[in-house]
Structures are given as structure tokens and as C-alpha cells.
Image 1 (cartoon, helix red, strand yellow):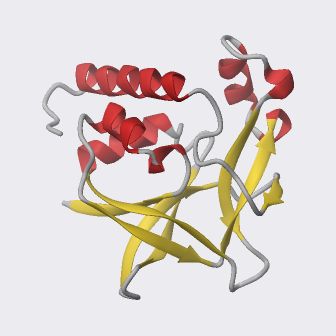
Image 2: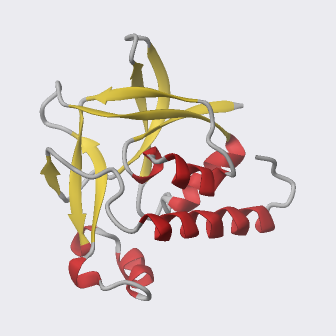
Amino acid sequence: MKRLVFTFGTLYEPSIISSLLGKVPRHFLASVKGYSIFKGTEKDAPEVIRKELSENRDMKNFSFLFAKKSVQPNDAITGKAYEITTSQELILDNYERYPTWYRKEGVEIEDEKGRKHQGFMYAIDKGGEKVERFERVNGDMNFYIESGEKIRKKILEEFPNIHL
């Protein structure tokens, strides 16, 4: 079974999504209305995530971007929608640390031709500061690629019967 996942940040980048999934799935440019991008800091991350990340990062300057429902219904996030399998979704869940950090939210995804599709995105519903401009990859690209490869390998070892 295939599902659509909407992405706007690190998962928007083909080299990162490829490191996670072994290839870049079929995708299209898209938007999701009623959401905005927020910037979170260490205090916005769950305790278990702060502890995990502090093992290899300086948390003093740590920040991350996330989607959250906007109080302005006309706000929208632009990004990509990827058509993924349930096996690929399992890998993305691990990458996004679902459900410990991010949660999945069902959304209506609109493609460039105005067609509507049902899908989901990873979101956080509290904290952060709304941002108008952002870099899709906020950090070291190689770090994200290496992390993606490690997560994919870990999941494939844990679940040897899944196919990407």
C-alpha cells in the first residue's frame, strides 16, 4: 500500500530522502494550507530527545524546524509529496522519532495543478517561534545523509523481510 508524505525541510532534499529510503520515491511539488513553519530550540524537544541529541551535539545552539497548525487559515507550507510504502514509512518514522518527538497528522496536499490528495506529514503541536524564511536543510548535509543511511541499515537489520 502506498501513502503520500508531505515534506518541507530535510526530507525535501533528494540526497537525504535517498539515504533513508535507498532511492528517491515518485514525488511532486505541493503545498499544505493552514500550517506554518516554526523554529524550536532545546526546550521544545522532549527530555528523551534532548538527552539523545546531547550525546553528539552542542545543545546550547541547537534548533530545529517543524510544521504546526497556524492561527491564520490561509498560511501554507510549500514542499514535496512523496509516494511511499509502509516499509519506507517505518524508516521515516524512525528518522523523525515518531511518536516520541514528531506525530503524524493527516493533511490535504495540493499539487501544482490544484488537485487535492490525502496524505500525512510529521508535525509538532506546541512550542516554537513562527518563521517566515528558512533553509530547508538547517545544518550539515553530510550529517543528515550519514544519519539516514544508519537508520535505513538499522531498520533493514531489525526487519529483514521488508522490501524497499
